[in-house]
Image (cartoon, rainbow, N blue to C red):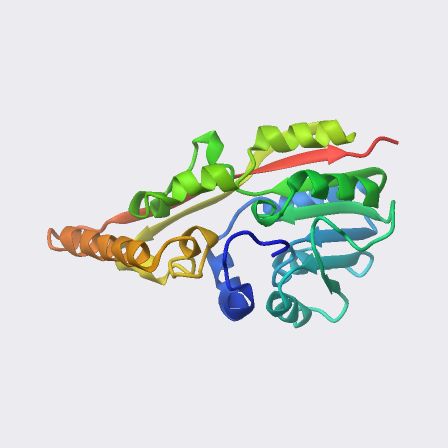
Amino acid sequence: MPEQLAPVAYDEIAKFYDSRYNVGPLGVTEILRTAIDRVQAARILEVGCGTGHWLNMLANKRIALYGLDYSFGMLAKAKTKSPHFHLCRGDAAELPFKSSFFDLIYCIHAIHHFRSPENFIQNAFNLLRPGGLLIIIGMDPHLGRDNWYVYDFFPSTKPADLQRYPSSSNLRQYMQHTGFIDCQCITEAKLQHDFVGADVLHDPVLQKNGASQLSLLGEQEFADGMQCIKNAINNISNHGKQLIFPAHIVLPAIIGSVPW
């Protein structure tokens, strides 16, 4: 995704990336559709659009949908979803569009890859027409509300995420300092799934390049974590029970409006 800092081979994983959406998250589409109705959006931009999953969820003949991503592979996958998407490769810090062009700009689980969230927010402000909305949705480990087995079995991933992910409060402050008004943070979107026993081994993120959290690990650390998961499954199974691997993750949405 745009200006990725984590060494995730997105061009390579694009072909199976959409499999992660089989278990959620919930609430994202509802937030976006509410925003579309609020501003009567005719032109929408997703920054870090990946395979175009969320663009596809919003597909509507009366709305022009634009997507920008840093990965050619992800964009190629997005193109297969609809010939009507306006897709381009680019950097979140240098959005190649004219001022006051969009009614809604959003990014979903991508801001932690951006070289400068502040620059992105400033760019978005300039590209939105008066009354337009910016929405940033993604994980915020700073809230301390997530219960994710990846953090348990790969213990260095959480400290790394605390460094990589901007907090919801900081993003809201960036928006306010840029000039957005009515800035708010809502926590209606979430991933809420339990993997039972060996089913967790089929979780799409549970591979070396399946998620940026794991791609940052050394090979030995990743292998050790995988072995711990397998040992835990076997140990509990020997007692006739099933181990639950939770993926309960809050996805705050930070929303700001451009003044009229």
